[in-house]
Image (cartoon, rainbow, N blue to C red; front, side, top):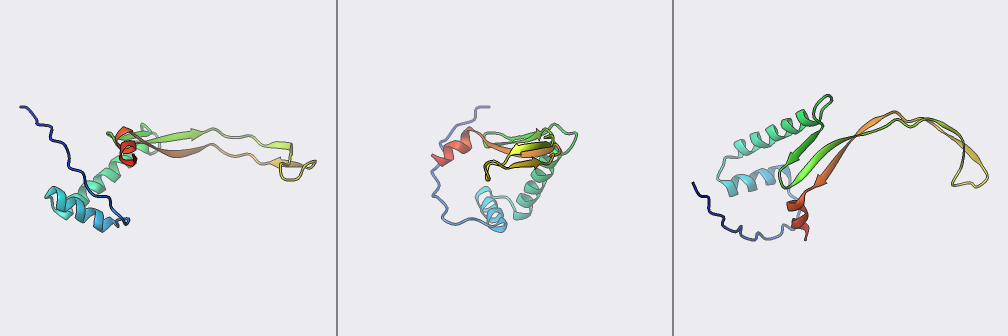
Length: 117
């Protein structure tokens, strides 16, 4: 079964930020799907992302072509004593320790980068 590749029409730029309701209405209108079904798909996407990045999970989720969400573990930083104060030359200060943390990093992929150009 051959799929024809028709070029997507250029859509006009949106001048104001959409609310969640406006986003649901726009997707429902353009895809001929009910608003409740679109909301259900977005809720399921939310759950799917959570299951990918929570503790003891794979730690990475990719929305193909658009973005990649990664968990980045920052190591613990030990305490340091007698460090020169950068704001008051000649004075020493103590830096407290910091525990290890997990940060979320969202990386744009090729298609998303092209939208900005």
